[in-house]
Each structure stands twice: as C-alpha cells, then as structure tokens.
Image (cartoon, rainbow, N blue to C red):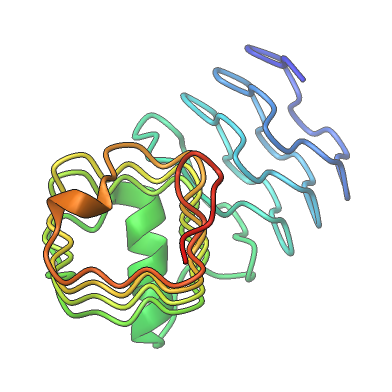
Length: 180
C-alpha cells in the first residue's frame, strides 16, 4: 500500500496488515497500531508520537533517523530491557549498533531482515537458522561465519567465495537457491 504522507493521526489501525507498505512521511501521531503487521514497512520521516505499537510486528526495523518515537508504546510495551540480546537487536534495527563489536556474536535464530551490516566485522559470528533476508552485507567481513540453515534471500553484497572458512549448510542464498 502506498500511504506516503497520509494523515493517520489518531487512527485505529488495530491488527492492520501494513507489511511492506510505504508510510514515508505519514503522520501516525496517537495512532493505535496494536497488533499491526509493519514488517518491512518503509517508515522514513514518520511521527509515532504517542502511538501504541503494543504487539505490532515491526521487525525488521529499517534505519530511518527521521522517524520520531516520542512517548511511543513499543511492540513489547517498552524499549527498556535488561536482556543484552534484545538490546542489541533493538540497536541493530534502530541505529545499526555501529559502536558494538559484532565479531563472534551468536545470532542463531534471530530475525535480522533488512538490517544494514555493510562494512561490519562479523568474523566468527553464528547466524545458524537466522532470517537474513534483504540484509546489506556489502564489504562485511564474514570469515569463519556459520550461516547453516540461514535465509539470505535478497541479501546484497554476499559472495561466499569472498570469505575464508564460511559455513553454508542448507543455506538459502541471495538468489533463492539452497546450498548443499
């Protein structure tokens, strides 16, 4: 759906399926998006001030610095967490977690669709059974990375021949084919 610039302030969008919609520039101030599906939705310059996203599917979050989350109820009812893994996941979607060392991290089973990892050192990371669709891996260092059973469909900048010691076992490659 193309909802660019739409004024949806105060709208009741409970359980709405807005997956892959273009909401760039939309005003969602005070909107009720409880349980809404916003997966892979374009959210550039969106105002979520006072919006309720409880239970919404927002992953993957794309890095849209202009998006306003002021006094917003997040999908898990809070963006505050003591879980280091969840904090990292939120940071990856919100700002790319550029200050964090990602080498050797265990991302097995994580939903990282659309995350921008270009130029990052992911040496020795474990992405077993992770959803990496549409991930940007241009110039990322992937030596000794485990991508067994991962889904890389649509990922950019990925060529297994460019990385030493990479593990591919029943991995869905960017072109949709499956490795051995």
